Length: 200
Image (cartoon, rainbow, N blue to C red; front, top):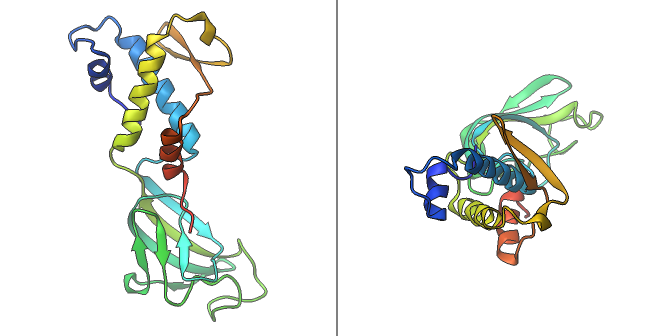
């Protein structure tokens, strides 16, 4: 998913929506900047289904790889290919925004529960979680960051000083070089880190 729409970008740049002469190149900027920002985050932030295996933490918190959590389908304890227990919804709590699951009895690794054997380790012994996570709409701070980047790049598009270390993007027969590395200010780094992951 792109972080901004063509209509939003044209309004940001002060280009009339009726002027379609630059639409192709603007779409290339949108895809290039969106890909760069998502790459910096290091994970897909948009809504999709996941089926993941976790080792356990021996604590009452378990941080999922993707967030925000939209819903949990199933949580199962698996030992050597056999499902020993499926947790009911009242056996854990969810911090949907941060992607953290809480359980009073802890998310055991090995030997902490009669569900698990001390002799079988991850991944043969694991907690299997099926869930849906990710944003259904582009967060406004990421949208604003993308608009800022595109605005800067669009303004200096003809500068020969920006032709080093470039990556190519193309639509139809039009090609545009996009610089793979970007310089972030402190506020932008904070935004990127917010979407990278959760520390507890």
